[in-house]
Image (cartoon, rainbow, N blue to C red):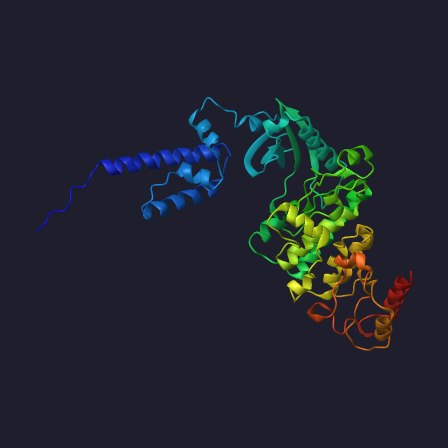
Length: 431
């Protein structure tokens, strides 16, 4: 009878040593706010699975591979005398940093407590490498100054913007929730009612900002935050510009500022005279993504995507998602007209149509392209499919859709609209 193998003491000791090292590294990563405890736990779980499969992957390697830390940061963790990673959060007086809640190429955002008022805030810190670039610093302060001039429930409130020990920081309202982008990243498609509610709130935020002379220029899902009670808040005034700032407009001429998937044609061209309608286009592109689960235009490169914004016709959203109402599709198409002259003139007009759609009514502004014979049929109670008057050939890329599943069959019958509404539509048509 064969004897059982003699247990080795070396392997358990090595395993214990590795376990202690991983525990120490986990604590350091979390304490230095390079990753959350949940993120570290996910890496540890991945490590255990790899080891069970025979792969001897280290926690450090997995953290780097998943983008939670960089090799340079790991070296600094190994050298406790180098505290350069934590300086930004250690040297902001009056605030107790709680944890890192976000990071990007331009800034890192922390959740913190403002000690003087005993309240939770968010602090955006400009990286040291960008703090030495006057252009980035000026843009950072412009964001703070722009946000400080806005006071609306649907806009993230600015509190302070300042500098300490060479680090520039921006203190703002802390929004405990998720972004629209977070939901879309889970392959969620918003139902019409919820999407319209969110877009109405953001449109009100834009109406407020526009009334105070600011163009946001970067409306997109990542910049729309949602609280637990359903309040939408527009964030990030980093690209905001005063409409009257002719000097900035001239300096930026010919340069495309914005996010390719949601950018307006005039921003792509770098037009000097960009106005508030550029935000309406970007909000329309965001709206499209929310209700279809797809961006309006996609491509292999940012340049390819932007070319489509300029040249390709928009596939009507109700052709992508057939459960959408035609009224909603018409509103999005008007918001995303390539020629801004055919978009909504302002956020107030957009809100009127959105509120009508939310009540199951026909949009007024978006329906000005209806032909006269259709309105006559509607007023006589005839139930028939309508079609638009075609726009000029130069604007076919922003033409509304015709017929098919995207159109409203029996769009409006006399019983669904009061005579007053019909008179309003006729009056608008004759303007």
